[in-house]
Image (tube, rainbow, N blue to C red; front, side, top):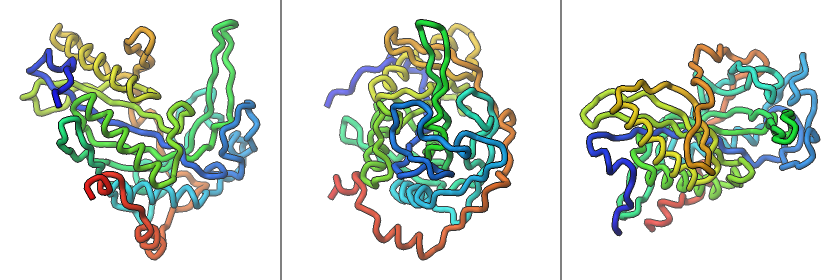
Length: 316
């Protein structure tokens, strides 16, 4: 099969490095730390209680199904499963985050050091390394009225259980990014842990991209393309962003580490905000949640009942 032309073909001295963070919404009946329904709800602020609304003094209780789904996701992506992991508080201040912190896993995630195999257009295969998979809760959703200029907050999604799958910067083209995302989505659907409906936001990808000369050893300054909800738009955004960054570097401009949004109508990326550093989030261990301790026998049972993964089934 003839290789599809890309923006990078015009700059043979350069290469791109891409790492992708995918938020997968888990298909549990209830939310991660409270008994509220996890179903998609059209009426704003209906699936809500004092816990997921962030009332002072309330105590979260971990949903065991969330842990099992995270383990399955780790096994399906060839990860090492941590028998002990913990939850942290990640502080930031948005209207749709009522507690002003997100419960997530920082230093001790549940899964590490995995990989996903991808198959490319020419029939070749490549291993994309998974740095980590961690469990976290989702925030709410802001809606902005173009008519009145008002903003509204819907907290139905607050407390929805997520796993975040984080790759190493092993992806080198839009084709590889697309192949990886399709492979990961298929794995999650095979395992039954998520619907991975991109239109509903159940499978959301943040793409971190940087460029450098092929002979440079250090990675370039990365920009994050945030929450793009289709494989085509992700591919288009990568093609635009690599050309934007290479042109800037060639002109002697400095690449700023920032988060950018993809305008699919005008086919350009737009600055959203400068990227926060780890120190800005002021992580610390959540004092209201105990360590997550996984029983070895339970892990062995989940491993024994694991389905044959799509890549292996294709080869067979």
